[in-house]
Length: 236
Image (cartoon, rainbow, N blue to C red; front, top):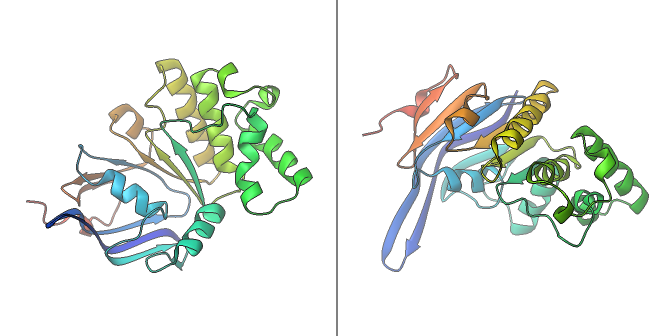
């Protein structure tokens, strides 16, 4: 079953009188439970694609279905609801609140969706256990290593049990040891059936995935591991 379906998705921006095409017409399908890496040079459209996949932005034209829901024409409130229910985000910058212990950082998405205090605390503890930090729940970010902070960020992404884990350069600020730990954790999450999409410029990170989608000039230039490479057509 498809979790992500992009059909001829374009994205253009206007800068004064100039129109910039960030995505030139992408058709891409990602099945439920896949582990996909998206690669490409600066300016290739990776960030724009991530924003659309994460419902942080909408296409200029084309259609985006996430778990069967058409995100292309949703209102801001509807997009916010989809982000909260269906997507877990992991960023290069950990985006943790420095004054809060790990468990409070993890439970934040549940606060936004109205989950009660006791249930929030229980689910936050479960998520921290899942990433191997059950014993560090009371520690604030400044008391944790970079790898541990990213694990907290992953726990936060998982606490709502989203359909999609979207990781943007998740190891960009980590040393080699912590990078190996985080990639191992993503491997484990994929093995349990989680859909994982990693945006990365690092070949070693991309190779951990089961499929690599390469972007060039706002188009899919290569789709390794997919039987359907129709969207890779016509890159000059």
